[in-house]
Image 1: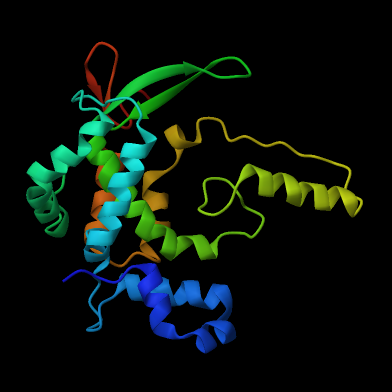
Image 2: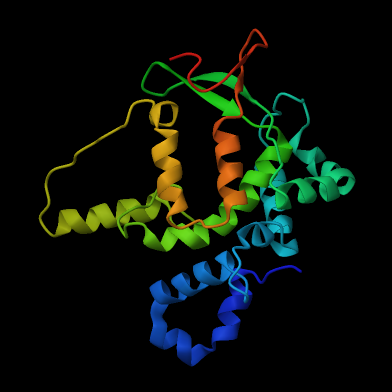
Length: 231
């Protein structure tokens, strides 16, 4: 059974109820409905695998293009991959046995000097990640600060600049720039998973997130490094 997407859930509420609730309460309602079935089971993975959600994920990954991962498969080849393999992919997601491939390391120059190491997943893993993000956004986005604009759906750099302009007009005259060096390389995985588990109750989803965190990196010499190997 495919679960409803966010828009279908909102339609079921009714216009008058939505006006009374406001966006924050409506978002909380969506999050709860995505996370559980009518029997109270934790069925978040079923929402991730739902038809509309995976179609949107496929469009996003193909549209973003991007470089191939370790298997050399290009983004434009994703529809063919899914036509051939979706049954097996879905089964492994639902039974909690999906195993991501290592990411391919690519080093790029930073605009302000220095370099940054990127990890490029295979397109199949990018599709699975995108399908997860679309559902997890409904669980988490409404809990974030209203002053946060980075990497959030419906928010942009232009909106952040407009907010900053408003602060200046109200008399603010200091700007503080903070950057966490190598945050994604150094973030504590156990603490991260503990935080995620406070809202994600489907253990299959938590296991999959952990699998992506531990999937490894293919180095330039084709060796595979895993978290902690280069510490």
